[in-house]
Image (cartoon, rainbow, N blue to C red; front, side, top):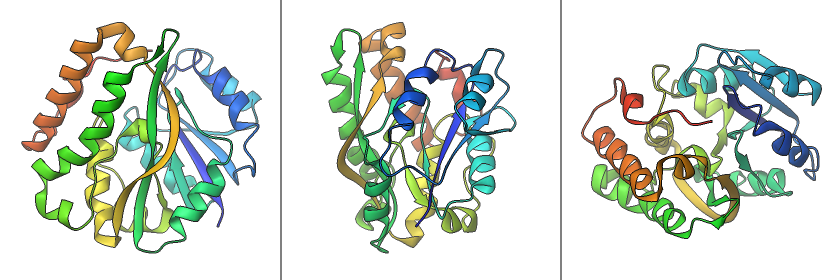
Length: 240
């Protein structure tokens, strides 16, 4: 099964050099790396093109950018990887092995949140816990059907055909688009958090502080669970 890495990006020139170096060492390599730019005003697209990635553009917003990337993908399997998230060297093998089980519709890695000062263990633990408690509280029936709520830093992966069949992400969504996708794809099977890790940047925690960061994560999740969809991003300030 061929694997496309889709990277939705916006002004990510600071994060891209490390990711480019890591993706070049993946063994086996993916079928392609596809960057979906939402209107960067820095060197993001130039860096991606120089790395040999395919670059397309889409309206700004993670939902619309992910939709455009999956629609353009040439691989049978797709992983959505954020620019500040570093995968393991055997990511492609892991994705193929997990999705070889047809009972699994969508899965994601376990993120370890790290910065220059080390691992943010408190937020890492909360990130792990909300994968379980969020669907249990917000969608208990789906939880019993094997649904878990995963988010962008989980490096979520799925079958391209099933993503297209459910209509992809909410194209209006700038945050929480992954949670909606988990619910949509649960019709095909389980949504799983696998016991392999990716490393993701602590840049939001560094900018906001750990208490504020976890409050923002919780607030946005509660608003989404209560049915709010429009302008959730105003509660989730952009950090680069």
